[in-house]
Image (cartoon, rainbow, N blue to C red; front, side, top):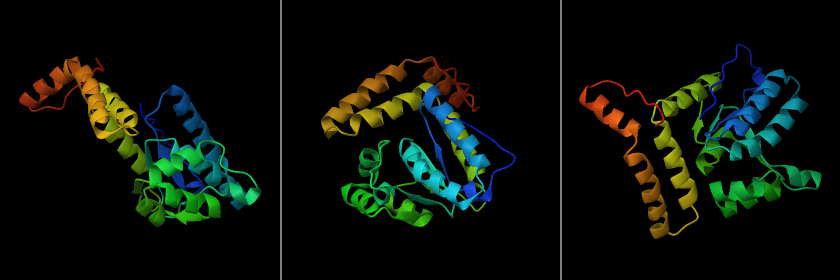
Length: 202
């Protein structure tokens, strides 16, 4: 499931980075609470807190979209501590060991362009269009078969740390779970009838 949140008012200071997640209800509630907090932030000091905590939240997500003026980082070492919400583990898996050590050990922040080049984010939204871009991305994913999305996500995540042959076995197992689904048959019918499929998640 992907949260699809719209708001009529978002502080320009807070329009920095918004994760789009494919996780379950607990993570969606956490994301909605994060967005509610972000909409209330006004001062530059508050923005610093948003960015610092927001990077680790974004690292826990499947897809990450940032505004052009976004700054991301894990500056905890400047406070005499280390990232404590998975940052040391997720960042290295996402951008590689060398880049992760660069960002974590220096505590520096990076802009959207460098974050995109490093693989820390997946897309940069147009100026002022962060929420719209996230909603469009969420809608694009949500329009696909929900069983297929879940199976693909699990296959990618489970196979990531495995050797190729083992990963392909994981993929085959998840492929077989959707092969006989009603959604697959509906997609075949829709293709033959030249219409969009109506997925039921069965």
